[in-house]
Length: 256
Length: 256
Image (cartoon, rainbow over all chains, first blue to last red; front, side):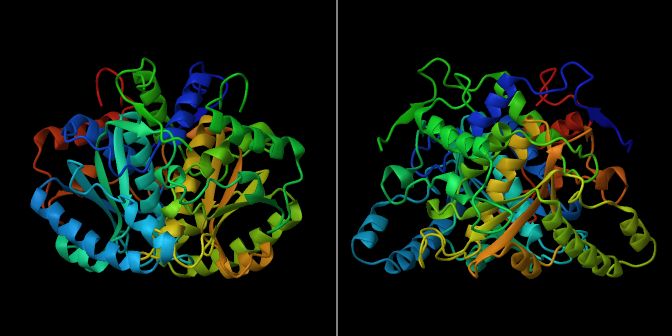
């Protein structure tokens, strides 16, 4: 295939407009993990095709594209997965104690049965043969590639007004059996997908007081771990940008 | 914080316009792993702040936000990391044989010294205490959250006309020593970041013939592994959408 380079400046229309950039940031900021706002309406096949194609265009180590997507609409299959969740969630609750356990039990953490569509995103660890370019030293990079596909899916879904919730309280070995996965294929993400009543302004765990958003500026280092960033314009931009996001002013009024 | 829900339909301006959706898909499709098109121009601090904030608004298991960002601009530090790459890459080349090894040696796989900015994105595996909501059964979900932050960073960077390349051919233990990482903090992604001469139309590994883009429709299953999707409108939408992406017609002319 020809090695075509899209130059930045010369051709009109090549660069992203301010509106384009705003749309991308808006999507990133308005994406939510959805657990209980699902509507039963089916997802249109054309929409699902687009969102899956967005996932398929994620980066992958060695261009491995190790992902597969198993669509689950049948209520019987979803009940089997929900049983796995119920068992794992009961085990999880026992790991917390006191008020924290009570708070945990009060949270709704999945929408397996309410969302009309569930999707298990898997990683085929043998997809590109025994030696994969770029995966020679960090074996998990194939799993990481699959996660990039999940994040693409999530963002594309948000622009299509589709809610997505990632259910991680599951026994993956049992899930693999339910789905008939071959030995080299592992579940990476179990997603609940569907239209929603609305998108919450803040993450549910933040709204419920479980845990707060961290100030990003404390997590940006320079040169080595623990050395704060030295550029005042950068640290100001981060702190002011984060405040603007909280107030819904990000990328408006010249901020950010 | 108030539990505000943004309803989809009622309020004007709430839904994403077709142009907004196009901007998001365009970003996803035009994102590239950049290795050799970097320009030496510095990254403006306001731009870097926005891209880091996009990363910080990734989903995370239990709202853990386990990421940190170590900025490396100093050439001495980048040379030390480049030395680690050179050593690992020589080891990697030995794992291929014959023509494949020759092809491997011909590829440029990083831009550590050319890109003006490197960023190591790390995961603090103890960030939210010993028991993390949602991470009780799948321990790697904190690493996966960090990867979601990387993908947000990558997409936001693309709209800012910043190239990003993920260098995975590194010994992470040695990298952790160079960066002075505490015991519980692990490197997840080592990124080269900078303005570029242009963005390539196709991934470099595809253009060089190393590996081809897979047909997505073969990797969408229904109900369980190996059962093809039954909805003709979905499989057509996927196949036609993928063809449209190849031809640069996606989301135009009513396609996709």
